[in-house]
Amino acid sequence: MIADNDDKPPKPAFFSRLISLLIRAAVLLMLLFVLDKLLPSISQQTQSFVVAKWQQLSLLQQDLPTENSLPSPLPGQNLTDTWGAARSQGRTHEGIDIFAERGTPVQSTTQGIVRKVGENTLGGRVVVVVGPGGAGHYYAHLEDYADITPNDWVNVGDVIGYVGDSGNAKGTPPHVHYGIYINGSAVNPYPLLQKN
Image (cartoon, rainbow, N blue to C red; front, side, top):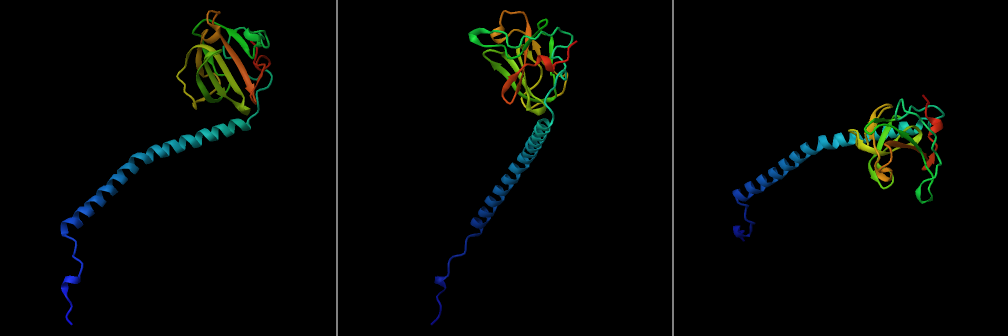
């Protein structure tokens, strides 16, 4: 019996194979383009993440502030221990107030990572810096912020904001409320600050 050539599957047309090949090449080129655009961004994000984690771990391994170890956030201004003073709604003062002219630069008392640049009801415009030992350094009632954003690294003496009366201090003499929090609890910053 002679085989019938009609039983063989038809060969794909040249043009359909060419179109399929072009589609695959286009998809591959698009993937390469996307990867080329994403890789530098991913690499930069990874590097930033690693640096931030290294800084955070380094800070946690350092000692907490000790008596007279921190410079004043307002060098040259008089320091008064206002810790524990009565406040509205039955609260007590969890920090100290340092008075100065409106707009006086407020300096970081420590190296650390900026955790917050924003507002809250009581403090108004606030900046929080996490320093050695994981202590939180809280600066409140600011008039304005310096050019900083969360996750920035700051050094001792870097300007983080400017004296004001924002938040529940509106209408009072301009000042900065400075607080320190260790393991989530407020501690009196006055003994930790160097006196002029």
